[in-house]
Image (cartoon, rainbow, N blue to C red; front, top):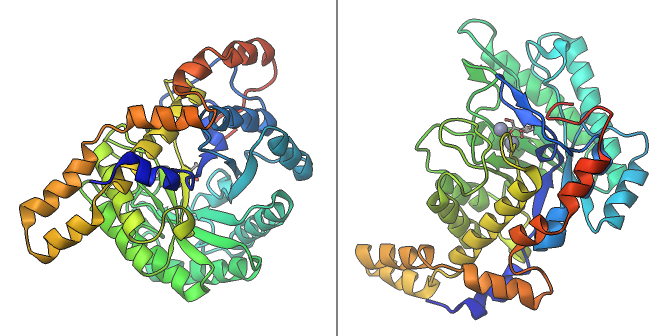
Length: 388
Ligand code: AOS
Ligand code: ZN
Ligand code: ZN
C-alpha cells in the first residue's frame, strides 16, 4: 500500500463548501431547538463558517440559500467573507417555503406560479453575478402525494420548459446544478426523484447543467458509489451534498452513520477523475446540527471527509488492477479493505501541524474562546434558523 507521504500532496487539493444553514437553528417538524450564540444574519453565518476553515484549512467557501440569506448588498457580504478568509459559493434557490408552491413550482400547472418560480431563479443568477458564484443549485420540492393527483408527464414537460429558461440565463462560467431526491416533501412522486431524471433533464439542457448527488436522497441499500461512477463516466457529476443518514434524509454529520460508504464513494470519485484538480465535482455539506454544537459539528464533518479521502487515496491502484485482472476476488477485496482500515488520523495531525494548522482542530476551536464570545455578543434580535 502507498505510504501516507506519497498521497499527502493530493490532500492540498481538497475544498469542502459549507452550507450557511448549518449554522442557524434547526430541528425537525417536532421541535426546533434554539442554541445560544447562533447567527442573527448571513454575515454572522459567514463568520461562523470561516472558523471551520481557520481551524482545518478545508472549507474555503460558504453556500448561500436565497431568500434565507438575502441581504441588501451582496458586495458587502462578499467583502465580509473575504475579510474572514473565505468566499461565497453556491447559490441555492428556494421554491418550497411559499404558499404559492403548495402544488409545485417549476412543474406547477398554473403559469403564474411557474413564472414566479422562474423569476426567483433568475434573481438567484443575478445574485451569483454579484457574489462571484459559479453554481446555481436547484432542489425542487415539486411532486404529488396521491396517485392521480396530477399528470406526471405534463409536470415533467413543464419543469423542463422552465429549466430551459433558467439555463438560458446561466453565464458562460456558471453551472446549473440539479439535485434529486427520492421522496419528501412529496410522498407519492417527486418530479426529480433520481439521478436518471436529473441526468435526462441536464443532458437536454446543455453541458453546463450537471447533477447534484445528496448522499441522503436514496432508497435504503442503494449503491450510491455506482451512481457516482456512472455520473462521472457521463461527465455530469456536478456536486455532492454530503451528509449521513440512518433512515431517510437525516442530514447527520457526514461519515457518522456509515464511514465505509463514505470511503466507497470517495474511491469512485478518485477513480472517476472527480477529485481535486482532476475534475469539476464540488464537495459540499448539506447538514443540520439539531442537537450538537454547530461549528464543531461542521469541523467534525470536514475532518471526516478528509480522513476518508486520505484512506481512499491510499488504495493501491496497481495491485488492485492486477488482482482484478487475475480474477482474484479475495485479493482485490483485501486491497480495498487494507486502505479502509488504515488509521490516518496521526498522519493527518502531522500534515496539519506542518501547515501551521492546529493538529487537533476540535480542541483548538474549543479553546479559542469564539463560542463564549458569540454567546455574549449575539443577544437580542431574531436568530437565524433553518428557513429563517
Ligand atoms: C433537501 O432535502 C435538499 O437536500 C436541499 O439541498 C435543500 O436545499 C437543503 O437541504 C437546504 O434546505
Ligand atoms: Zn441537499
Ligand atoms: Zn436533503
